[in-house]
Length: 233
Image (cartoon, rainbow, N blue to C red; front, side, top):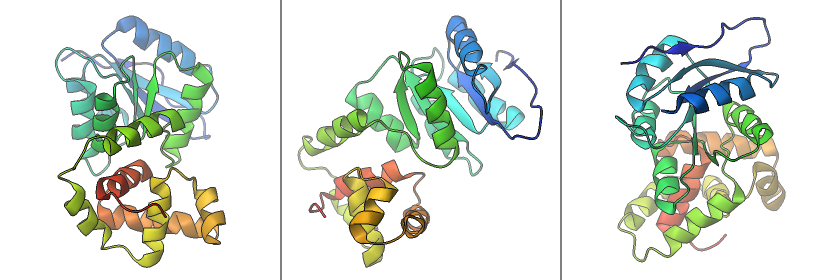
């Protein structure tokens, strides 16, 4: 196993978002480290070159967010994300890759990734995504979300449908209404306006749903709603 590349020690009392970079290309690791180091509130805790190194690096460095490549020689980023998100203390994961097929997006989100970005994404947007997922708000662009939902809608009869409906039956009427609107891609503010409730109440519903459904983030709620093939709310 290659040694973890420790980039810089955490300093100050501002609690920057600690980031672990996972990519098999040394130049990409160096470039991301330099680029992210230029943004306030972000600290690159370290970088590793393969998915097999992620678990040990997370235990050692305690990052808040992991930037995860997909294609790596020993353990790919999607499998590494699945393993990582199974941990009770797992950091958030943003998949940062050159691959944007429906299959990759679907597997990344189902594995528990909180974001999916391409490597040509502007640096400022990557930095914004890091802050967003660290704050508990998944970052999935509307374009990617539409592609994901279109892929599921066109897949024919999904064997997960009945199981998804059973899981959603555990929700209260209010939770179900919020879930259906998450499935439409609405933000918390948009849901609050449509259901005439406060944004804080919507956030409370989302938090309870994640616990009840044993999910990691709101994007997985959206996928569950679409798996269930529910009528549009």
